[in-house]
Image 1 (cartoon, one colour):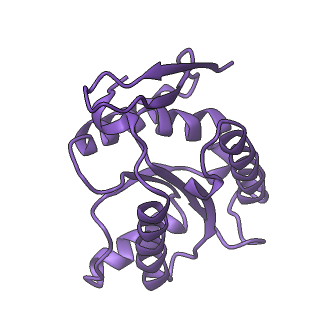
Image 2: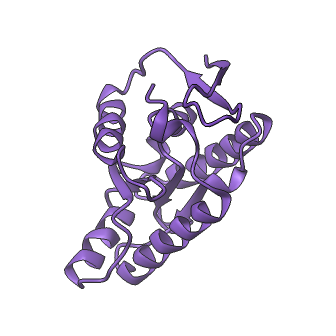
Image 3: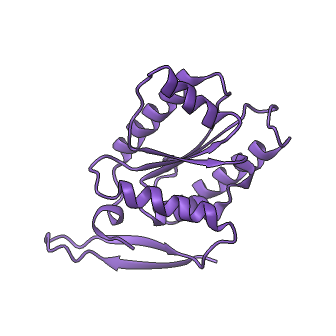
Length: 183
């Protein structure tokens, strides 16, 4: 269960800002949570929007690897978290990424109909849609989260998606709490 509270900005800027914070007890899949924490701690000091990408090890992660092997440039602010299947990414994990400082999150898995675990990417897509509704209810832009289907041979698509997601988050803006309100 998540608890919602509002916190006033204490930065002395003269503007009162409110920041929605999400809190939850530790997850059962602790390795993933520590992965989110480690990536976001490293990214914390950047002025660029911080984006977490949960990538399926069979397809999207392989595409990211291919993009690197092909020396394709994609933004360094995209922090990849390897998952065995996007079907293992829960709503809690996506929200935890935001809580740890992400400005945007995307889940990248196998092409529809090609999941190595049959329906994992379909479950992930439904969860991403649910998170969009949660963000909207909290007054945040649903565009901050997305699901992409990328096959292992699509290194170019992985680089394109990373760039497009970064531009999307630049347009909606960086969340206030991740740079100055470490939680």
